[in-house]
Image (cartoon, rainbow, N blue to C red):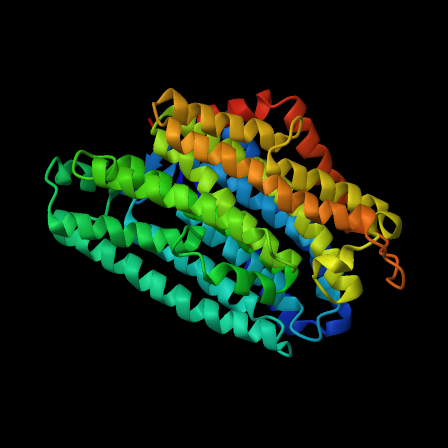
Length: 478
């Protein structure tokens, strides 16, 4: 029998660290807060190290009467969230230092959002999941609108608040319908109570839950918030929102789908809805990304398309499919973080995120150009980078289960995505950048860029260790 405090060590440590950082931000004078970033980095490194140890050497367990799950699936996602948070903190130091006010609260809110994601990944019942989701989402409401003197940031915050609250209400209504039908919010009991009875109420609950989670994942037709909010939010926040919050919603969707919507009552309906949403998401995300002139908006539509690719693995309903989702979600952290690190650097040095501002970038910032090129080519699925291996796992798992059409759609859309990724690379290498300043890379930002690029290349050349982790995490669900 596990000691609850021992099992919840990462969550407890993260909550304590967030409160400590919040107190430091409130009590210590502004000029003495330069140590907040190193404190956050080393603390996250400690929690991440413990979580990795727990993944490889800990034991699987379900506790608290099924309210909260401690298995390799949950721990895998905790590693992902902590890695993403660590990379965002490392890449945002210079950006945060230039904020006019409220610098101290930035790291605390970032950690609270991470804590919410970890609760979502381990939730074994719907109310626990909802509490974690709201902790994450409310933290992001504040972070998106963090630039109080910037009209675009304030607008993005208001939009995210209104639309996010609406999606949460829809999700909560779906949960209430499930509770009314089964008398329980625990996923295992819901699956056994539903049995094979498909009713209008259960169908409506399915639609509402998929709609609520679809908003968090940016699935079409629940994607329209993403471009405006990604563009208006501070660039480090956009990176974390695009990477980690999407992964947290996928963690919930996988558990809910495999344990409840995959029952006989939901199987055909849920499968059809996921198939249609995945196909449309891949098509719309890639096609609308083509004419974009703002780097953050382009990456927003790219992230929408990436969500469609990840859905392909869930549709496969197999260990191989979930392994593909977990593998791709992890490499997406590093590839997307590399591109957003460059976007953060450009926003910090030039005050803009237009693609044209990357003109002549290979002369003005050679390292950032190489990192951006590697990250975009990985997102496009070009070998031998990690993105190619991830898409191979996803599409092959779907084809093995007979879902050839969705795999073909994903393959064609990946080829189309090469066009707009290469358009950014073309501007960096071929466009003239006369009059634009040099953009040097120093310190933690430089480390983040080099590290994400090396990981992206290394996993592409030797994917076996990460693939084995993904398989172990996927098998804990079946």
